Each structure stands twice: as C-alpha cells, then as structure tokens.
Length: 398
Image 1: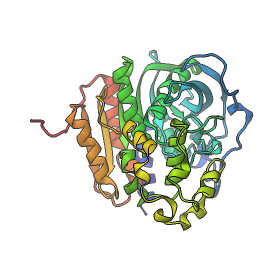
Image 2: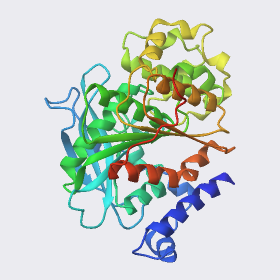
Image 3: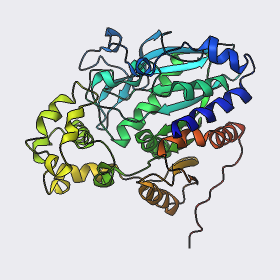
Image 4: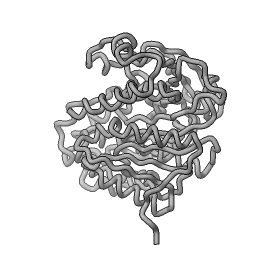
C-alpha cells in the first residue's frame, strides 16, 4: 500500500511541474507499458565496462569513454549517456567507475543545467549489479522527475559495480570519491552541464553523500552546494543492528568490502564455514537468496566484531567525526527500525557544528519516505542553487 503512496507523490509533482505534456500524454505515450518483472530485469554487461587492470596512466575525474543509451525506462524528454571514468580507491589507487548522465532533451540554460550527483543504495557487489544495467536505473521515475524540473542527474555505479575492480562495499571514502569524480567526468561528456552541484542519495547512498561533504571540507570545490541524505543514515559500525533488519547477505557484502579496503583481511576470520560458499557466490550474483536460510549466529563467528580489520573498517567509516562542508538535509522515517541510528548520526553532525536540517516523517514504511519528502527535497535544492542561506534545526549547543 505504501508503494502506491510513493507513486502518487511523484505523479503530483509531474502534474505541477511538467508543462510540455498533459498527465495523460506522459502516462500513455511517453512511457511504454511494461510488466513489473521487466522493470527489474537487467541489461547484459558489455565490453563498454571493461578496462585493463591496472589502468593506463590518468587522473581521477578523466573520462575513459562514453556512449548514448536510449533503452532505459525513462520519460521521453530524458537523454541518457553512459560514462566510464577514472576514480580513486580508498587507498589512493587509480580505479575505473561507471555511471549514467541524465539530462533534459532541450537547450541548456546559459549557465548550464545544475547537477544532482545521485548516490544509489547497494544491491550486491558483483559487476552485474550496476544500476546502469537496470532497466529503470532503480529509481527511474524519481530521477526522470528531477530532469523534467531542469536538472542534470549524474548517477555513479560505484567502482566495481560494472567495472572489473572489486567493490568497496559501504566504504564511505571510496563511494564518496566515485560521486565527486563522476561529476567531473560528466561535464567532459555533456557540454550543457553547469558547474554547480549538490549530492543526494538514499540508504547506503545517504552515507556516501555525507562522505562527499566531509571530503569537500578537506579539498573544497566552490561549486559544491550541499547534500541530501535520504533514509538510514547509519554508521557501518552499527551493522549488527542493521543485520537484524536486513538481508542475511549483508554480512557477506561487509566482509567483501573490508577485503577490498584491507587485502590482508581474511573473510574466514569472521565468516563461518557454512557462510563461505555464499561469500564466493556474491562475486557473481546480486542476490544469493538461499543465504537467508542461515541465521546470523550461523553465518558469523562469535567475536567477529573484535577482528582487527573489522575494527579498522568501523573506525574509518564513522560519520560525524570530521567536519562537513556545506549544508545537509537529512530525511528519515520514524517508522524505520533503525531510525534511532540515524538520529544518533545527526547528533554527531550537530555536535561538530555542521549545518543540518533533520526532517522526520512519521511513516510506517521507510521505503515511502523518498516519495513523501519530494516537495521538501525540491524546495531545499532550489534554495541551494538560488543562494538562499541554509537553515539548521540542530539543538542549541552549550
């Protein structure tokens, strides 16, 4: 039922903000009629995503190649170009990341289309799990809405989803750098893109955009204006709590991410013998559904959180320990089982005097909050590009 609410919220925005066609025309002429199973189907992985390992010399943000792609299930007024670009790993190595640039099928404004760097949630660590291989980019109607409002959307896949490098699952620095460098590569691909940009993400992508804000404080880009974090802004250190409400695949993916960042780490040190066969399969499968048959106690060793490399990973990915550049809008459902973890991260951000607006929605379905908060998102983004001073609702500090 709540999924219907999401659709309704987006439809209202399309009706109010899309002048070229009526609602009836958008619904019946622009978008093809397809079954739900077809929407979820992925495109095949092609040679477009292949690179040599190691890569030829280059600089992060440089474009490797690009290719227009017109087979996504998007509004007909949206142009799409796939990109492959140089990024940087957590350890400073040159890696390749892929993604998609979405932009209006019209003449750009004088200063270029303002940019939204989109950070998606994580749906596996295999190459075939790249959102750019999904028929509707995971959030096609939502992203189409922002393009229809006059924005360009740059949606990274993250390194290793698509490209032939290991994915740094849940590593804030890795994913944040993929976001930042995707904007640079996108500008080299589409001349109509402007300089100014904001970052926005949901679930694990929400964590990545806070990482963007932290990196921008260390190496400021005057064109960066702020970030929106939607739903589940929780530290990876709280993964035991997250695992209780998420798929049993999460421990496998977490081990994979730690191994990517710290090659010395051995997954056998935290995963049980029963879990190891499933760990091998996540390299090639987005969803290892029969892993759900194991309980967490059957999958993880008793003292797994005390492992040296796990502890280091937790420390490196703790949010709110570094100051953030620019304002943050944090959106969360009070009905989310891990709402308390999001509130805890917000308090950390507030304690270091970051500019944070925390919008809470009393919704029993956390998945609906991305649609329920659409008007607040649009208003906040408009104000950033209009130069309006951002507000904070952090409690007063002593």
